Amino acid sequence: MMMYFKKTTIKVSPRHPEMRDFIERIPEVFEQEGQCVYIGRNVIKAFWIKVNGEDKEVMVKRYRQPYFVQRIHYTLFRPTKACRAYEYSFKLQANGFATPEGYGYVETRIMGLLKYCYFISDVEHSPLLSEQLNELKDFNKVMASDFARFVNRLHQKGIVDLDLNSSNIFYQIQDDGHYRFSLIDINRMRSYKGYPPLKICVENLMSFTGRIDLFEFVIQQYMNVRGINENVIRKILEAKKVHDRRWKHIKGFTHLFKWIRK
Image (tube, rainbow, N blue to C red; front, side, top):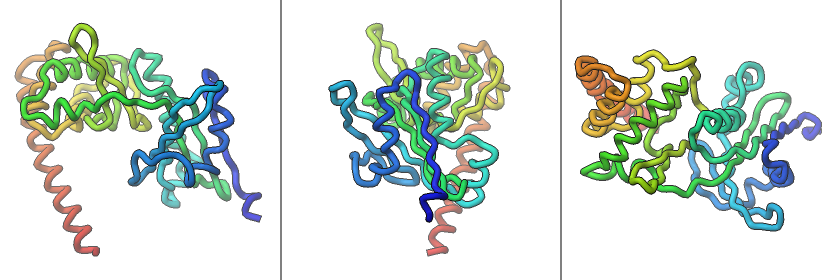
């Protein structure tokens, strides 16, 4: 009887109708097939499939099953994470920003409520930004400066990526020695007409790194591009230090709470 209460929604990019057969099979094959790339709250797998007679690598991200209240929320009020990631991939590309091509998404529901959703995309094999910035004692200043300009372009287009951290950004070096960036984990974004309020822009950059020296360099480059004076930059740096102290305190409390619950 349960099969009568199941529903699957499938969206295939009009650019890639050749992906339909694979996308339609994802709920059936995801558990048994594919190579795990990441297992945590969400699960990411790489699949090798035949497309037009050629082997092609495809990435599939399955978002964790929502809690009951969230299932109602995603059913009635808000697009799923997979749907948003798919739609935002087109929005980013339309505005000139790189992100793996979105091939489609799948949503499975039981009794009308969301169970799982899957986002299917191309693969990004470039190195992570964190390798050249967060993990090096002497960070790459050319890359950091280019990154500041990249974020300014995002904000100029009215795009705020709420998961803008260095583990979600890939880089490619160009012939002129400068860098191009590509975004992943793009299901959480806000849109504005033109620049968002400066407070929103600064908060967006604060999540990028916990290194104060790197943040100071990037925020100065960002503010210089926007023509904002030094007094504002000093206030932002003080706010960043307060932000990081509070974050460490919250993380410490969270870890203590988890330990108490064991």
